[in-house]
Length: 141
Image (cartoon, rainbow, N blue to C red; front, side, top):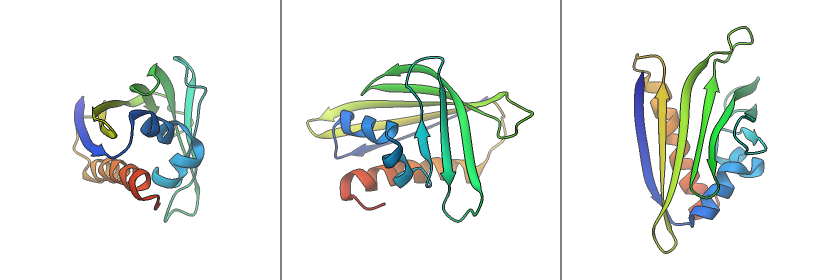
């Protein structure tokens, strides 16, 4: 397993960051054009779908909610992206913490079951977190 941690500070409350992570209209603005779908209960599916930037075909990422603490913590799996192989290939954990009034420390941890470096995947996670910050602080997608 390979674990990577990413974090940054966002000028927003944890509740506002949580809203951005769980609202389909918001995720579409920072999650590469993908809208999230879930009922946010442990054991429920989580799906990201849409047409990602620079990709003419529909994208589907899916997983299962493992843990939810609204405004604080979200953990879910990500499944392999083929229909025949539905094994978990990573775990995604979001942790939100108010570091000072109006400032949230957003941390993203990815536990990949493969052990091989994937610079493109690492760059995608960094960009996603950066885009989340940009959307919340400036309103620009």
